[in-house]
Image (cartoon, rainbow, N blue to C red):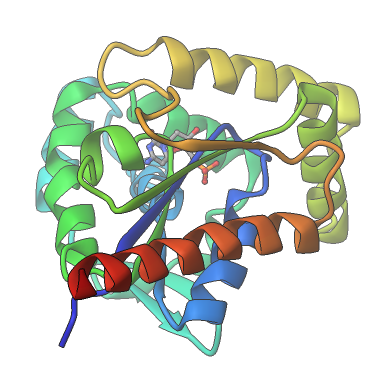
Length: 231
Ligand code: DC
């Protein structure tokens, strides 16, 4: 059987990677892989440590924590050492801590095979900050999803309001600026547009428009492969 492609979606926080990634995965019956959730799951474990949260401890933990993921009825779920932590990792606090620990090169190194193992068989939509550059550099289809800071902050604000998190739009915007800077400026695997990636600005586009644009690219990719084979 022909191997299904790996599709990567990179981009900053709030660009719509999760929403779009899930829809694309469902549409093509691919596995949806949210790598931010893997960093968040580790951050959650670190946050709940009783002992000192030194860099050394975090690196040590990243090397011996078992992180597993699954798609359960269209819902992406992540477990740490066998405990499902999906419901606890979406706060701004955990997001900021995840961004902080993701700067540590040894942590990234330890989480690399975890992500690659999940995606290596193909048939996966992987979203994060370094999917098309480091984790799946040979991915068949690469997207980079972007949006203006104001729009991204507004989306995150709505999301957190719905969860009753008490945070202002101003605070979210400030968090986002800090997180963008941290993700873009870190030395190892910084957030950047992968070579050959198709860049989509989602600021003024509906979810449906973006899904259609991406689906066209994916369908065209398969078509090209088939015609190439026949030639
Ligand atoms: O996408 P997210 O907000 O759930 O990601 C949380 C943090 O995890 C993000 O600020 C940086 C880090 N991250 C990363 O460094 N590399 C990835 N592939 C995914 C997330």
